[in-house]
Amino acid sequence: MTYCDGGIIGDEIVIRSKDIAEHYIWGEGCDGWKLVNDPDISIIHEKMPAGTCETRHYHETARQFFFILSGTVELEIDGVTSSISQQEGMEVHAGTPHQIFNRSHEEAEFLVISSPRSAGDRIELP
Image (cartoon, rainbow, N blue to C red; front, side, top):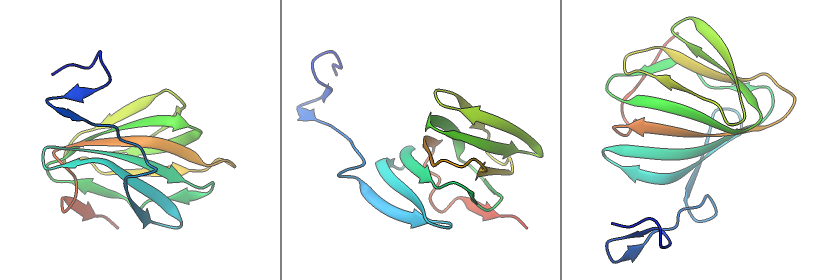
């Protein structure tokens, strides 16, 4: 496995981008692109328009890391809300209630890295 000569893993060259990734829409006009979607890890590039949020929830087994690419979001984790800006991130442990908000006037883009994959592991909260 080498990374210094173009991202070669084994005999396969792997280039990931949202231009070719599986796309889905969530919430109120938010976008997600599945860059990596393996059982042990998922990496999703997400975009939230200004004034949007997701529903409060937790994951039974998935641990997540939110890394902001552009814009500013607020991430509420177990009742504590933090503002996260470009090039910053926060971790959410499995079983911890959380919710992300874009209360700004600009869209925000970020990566959500989950281990194991969070699909089917989400418990919605009131």
